[in-house]
Length: 114
Length: 112
Image (cartoon, rainbow over all chains, first blue to last red; front, side, top):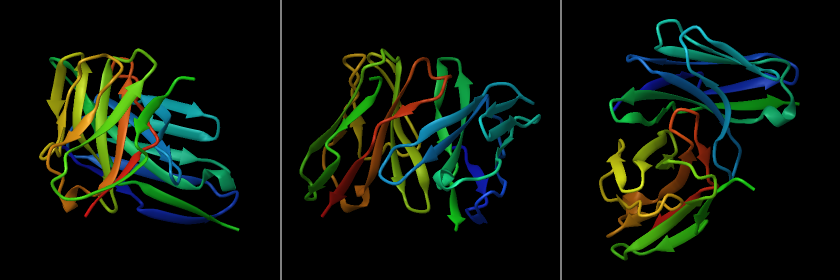
């Protein structure tokens, strides 16, 4: 199946710093999604992107759908302790029968140091 | 409350003993999907369903079965579980597949 390369694998930052993470693929996706997972819970959708070049914000989070449709990035501004968690990118393609399932990156583990 | 409900949350079983993990959603979503999550491997799709009686294999379908007889339910069946199926499993649903998926809280399965 398709693979997504997500980086960095982990980030150790100070509270108040900005964060940036990205995902790249060798193949094109029609939709890019960003999820956050906290311990003991399922992933929660943060931002969905549907068009190449699209830039979308959700509070302090901003994500972009790359022009080539093979990449996406997520920025978090002015990080706070509750931002701690694992962030996943996911890509989705559409086939003749409809939307295919999601392909996930391996996640970026965000740790905020006091 | 709109949600995806999985049961059980935790399960320990023995090799070869058939088991079913249930998944139900109350949002009238058409799409449903199963994932497994393993350290270092992230989330990998097992099966997905685009509607009642319509299912398709994901990236890691071997050793699993699914059925979609009703829109709200999408059970995951392990006919003969093996230790390499020890994992954290998530069910998810989506209105039309394009709008992102809502995930359940997970089922942690251990096969000994």
